[in-house]
Amino acid sequence: MDPRLKEKVAIVTGAGSVGPGWGNGKATAVLFARHGARVLAADINLAAAEETRSIIEDEGGRCTAHEADVSRGGDVEAMVERCLAEYGRIDILHNNVGILEVGGCVEASEESWDRVNAVNLKSVFLTCKHVLPHMERQGGGAIVNISSVAGIRWLGVPYVSYSATKGAVNQLTRSIAMQYAKKNIRANAILPGFMETPMVVHSLSQTYSGGDVEKMVEIRNQLCPTGKMGDAWDVAHAALYLASDEARYVTGAELVVDGGLTCSIGA
Ligand code: NAP
Image 1: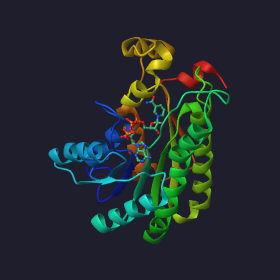
Image 2: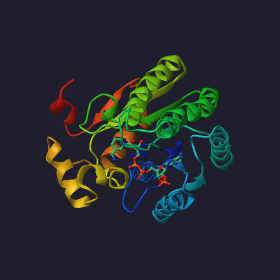
Image 3: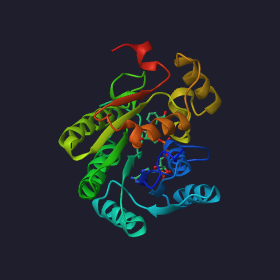
Image 4: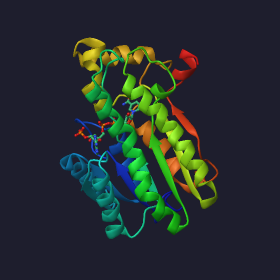
């Protein structure tokens, strides 16, 4: 059987990981490569992208590590040009970059609000702005945006900028899906629930457990209907499906990957 992403070229943003272990973007970049894609692994931290590249190349795959801050238009343009120069096309745009800063409207600073909006939302606008013309010229493509169930539910911790930007990513995804439906370009969002990734340790352990990582993991596990958080591979497998031609009739969808969390906390 042919690899599921045979002959495809993918850009994965945030393809490194904020700390040791597997972040969603890193796992997705590696899984895409295992399924035949050539991958441009972009990250603000070049060393993190290089680590992903070396994992892929050690497994016999093709990958280019590229430094980019995807909240900046110039960086995004250069990222797209690099991908075209290396691989000649872009079939898959996987928008994984996202940051989380805790705080409600009163506690969060204006700077924090602007930063999270730029990194979580403006980045998706920018990558789509620069990639869509190439997908259109090629006759198709697939965009996968990493959102969060925080965009559709209250999860017990106030992080207004994160929730608002993820909600906006959902609607941005639907808009793109509709505008480009007749052009064979699909856009879908993945809404992960509580996942055990380096980002969570980095951004949330203070909030849940005063910095005690083991305790935070225990608390978050207990909040999940399955009794356990998901991990980066759960997100990566969902992305693999949406990026592949198996999902050719799936566009404008929100794929919730949360072990039933949203069922347990209602609308
Ligand atoms: P991660 O481990 O933090 O990886 C993201 C990578 O993106 C990091 O290497 C980070 O670099 C990089 N990055 C940050 N800002 C960037 C920018 N402006 N331009 C380019 N790269 C940038 O995070 P993850 O665990 O893979 O999570 C990724 C996505 O999953 C996010 O969109 C997040 O909201 C979503 N998500 C996660 C969970 C969860 O529970 N883990 C749940 C729902 C949704 P630095 O290390 O330098 O910051």
